[in-house]
Length: 425
Ligand code: LLP
Image (tube, rainbow, N blue to C red; front, side, top):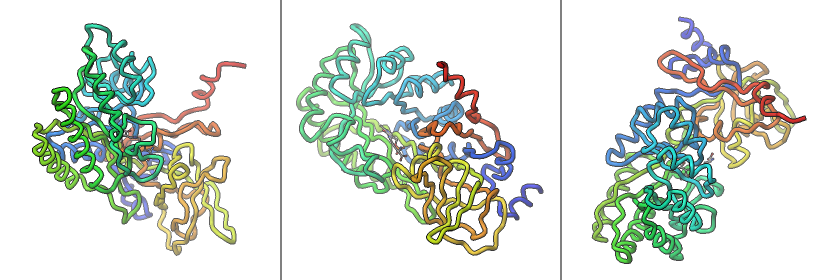
């Protein structure tokens, strides 16, 4: 009954828990993660790609609970640091289901990966081949993949396009660089090359670039067979599946993606006389993004001749995405029912710079005032995982909601936490 009354007042419940209750109990800013939604999204991937190995890209968001849910749903994990790797493995994630990425893996990253026994390490640069072979040691054995840059432009923003030749990731296909490096990998007895990897970019909303990637990767697989007599059994197409951040936006349809990728793979392999490789995919955003939501309190409202600024108690330190990529969110008023006409406002953060804008020119009820609660939906991916310590405001906590219950997963960063690292004077 209490929650029904809250909903009458314009409240929104996630995972069966009213958001006002979460704000009261845990304070704001706070990130809310819907466990059921994360699990459902994992299952959607399993259902759409039953024959594939689905790896959750931990960079989107990782905490121990997240690793646990993903593991229970039968997914593997894509990590890109010893930190992500160790957090997952110490939570009980089977290391053989983990793939290590990184264009600049540190000695510690490689040592940790080998010590914990990760399933595959993805070689990203030519200099890594000898380094990895030496780390594995004579007589040792490590399964590896190789990251190929397919020369395809795709992705929601220039900064998150990784399929084009002129950038830091991977070995380029178009100039034969990848093939040359792969020949060297095949010469290392302790490295077992299981397949090619490519990651086109992120927030991709069309299936087409994936089909082009399949054709190019199969083409390279055929050339490697012809040149070296090896038939690589795996193909990793990376992640990048786009989601809707605001009502009316298009997400990449996973069923269509799965069907068309499978058809293209079968057709290209048949044409090249190759067996169909086992597929791997690495979605991050599409699993975590829509399952998360950020809650803020309004601290100040300023009406100028040009616009109304609504300032909240978080900002670019917990969500750098609008500042980095010009992404647009759709915040909404929570916890009270307003009859005021919606008016255009710019929602800004509390940080000390003018570019700390969370959402420009969105519509909120005209009577929005300090003390109001705002929710920013689709906040589960690349917010907290990219959070900074700017202005020492402390990183927000993460609360899981599931079937009417809320529980703290990651507590708020306190001044004591910050002070405890500050060891000099
Ligand atoms: N695999 C590899 C090798 C990747 O580099 C990435 C993302 C993924 C998988 C997962 O991509 P997803 O499915 O999440 O799109 N900070 C940016 C996104 C950077 C993505 C980096 N790599 C953002 O906030 O939009």
